[in-house]
Image (tube, rainbow, N blue to C red; front, top):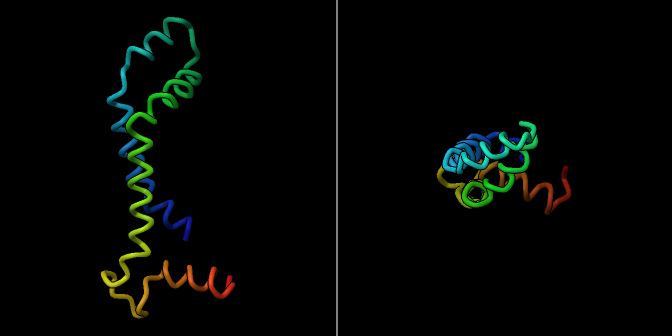
Length: 99
């Protein structure tokens, strides 16, 4: 279930992060390059500092909403069982210890 949620939410998270990094100030990268910082260090240090401003907060909210809606929206899927597969798996693993 975790793997399926990771695959389903990854494209959304990636699009939001790309948009956030496109809006970041490119002058910081130019200064780091002029000071002789290696490319890997630029990406690691500056993107890690710039992404949380907008991108990571938005990504966390979107991924959380997608995960919660999987548990709260079973009637829209019209499964043969009365519950969505995510809810049924959760009840089996957590409630009945049926791994």
